[in-house]
Image (cartoon, rainbow, N blue to C red; front, side, top):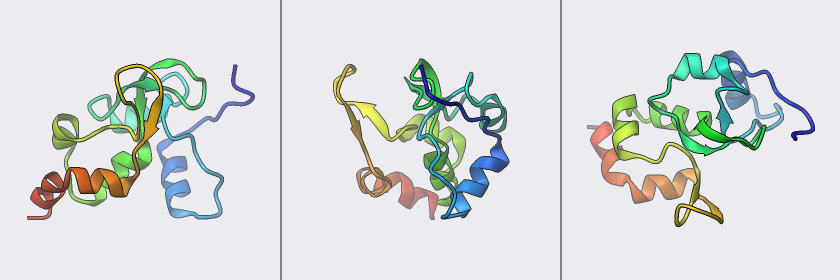
Length: 118
């Protein structure tokens, strides 16, 4: 059981991204923990994973990653079809989980980022 829960809305996420003094947000949140975020972003950019808030498994959003893609000019369909939709991924479909930074993702999928900037 989590020690505490967040009630996140899209505006909370955007404030946290832009405000460096804001406490860090969970990296992946499920629709049960953040339904307002799912209403805003939709399920197209979500992916199966574990929720960093309630530790449940299901559809999760990595909002900072999706916002990064969008700031690079990448649309939701391209994100869904060609890019990882979360930074924490299992290496072999099970455990352990490995973290992939934004820089590592951009390097590995540079053809997608280059196509978006054309």
